[in-house]
Image (cartoon, rainbow, N blue to C red; front, side, top):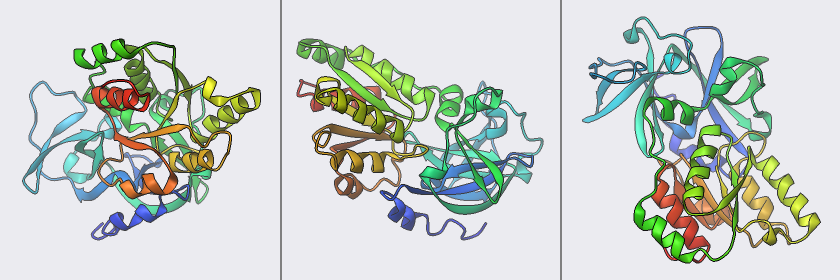
Length: 307
């Protein structure tokens, strides 16, 4: 794996073209899984791990990486497939999600593939594993399952969804009319987290699972009247099947009936996010996941209320 990710930082050029690159890996079986290269810092053989008392069972230990201590999670165990027998025979994918660095223990790592988000589809319904997937695709006629890492993180690490008293009070003082927000995210956990935040500041929310679904909804509303009477702003993830958040933003800005919508990009791509891309595609602001206070504050600012 030496050097396989050495050009990750250069891959940001794919942003805004509805394209992504997936790192393919296995969890001890023939099933192929994928993770967006944007999230990956490096891939290494599993280093010595130090067990953590009272940790979640999926946390196999902590590792020292260049002077930094990071938790290493058994990804197979976290999604209910059973843990690995010997971590030292596995790889660790070092990632950054939601402002945190962590390692995911995987059985083996395959390669990186370049794809279009239109080739990434919502997961099938009806299987137990589907609850841990945000999307599926095919590479060389093999099914690739893309894990909902935000769901894994919420279950293993936990995230506070409560906003501070100060933010709540500011929201209450500025609330004079009902306002709705369109929330676009492929992760069911992320949608619930955002909804919980908006509920606490007195805002209604409408949910969409990807950019294509959101754009169709906006077009429907525009056909029925002014879209600005339906929603006050859009909160969109970036990584989504069928249409990513960058492309959604560009489509909105190119439509005279939608172009003035306030768009806040809300994503776990904090480590490699290029703020110039926000300006390039025409989004109003970027907020890294997941801080309830910061998200609530930025939403209130967008609505012109005190925060």
